[in-house]
Length: 80
Image (tube, rainbow, N blue to C red; front, side, top):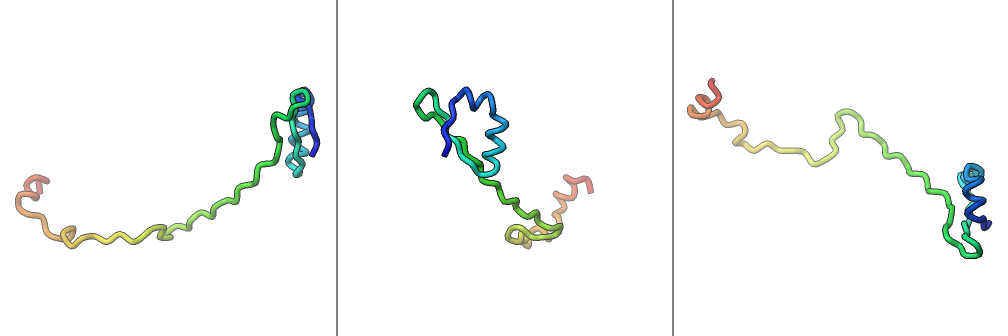
């Protein structure tokens, strides 16, 4: 692993990032003290999108009361 100074890191950041993308790692030092590690970020694996119509969760079941006829009072409230 290569050690670079903060000045080198600032001056040639694009160059170091290109090397990091290829898998290299760098220690960034201030003076003789290591301060940070410049390392590649693992690539995220894309999650497959569900197809239209795929059921993603448990099926919803309607209660029997959902199919019961409306009462006279409910019909009046709805203006029917």
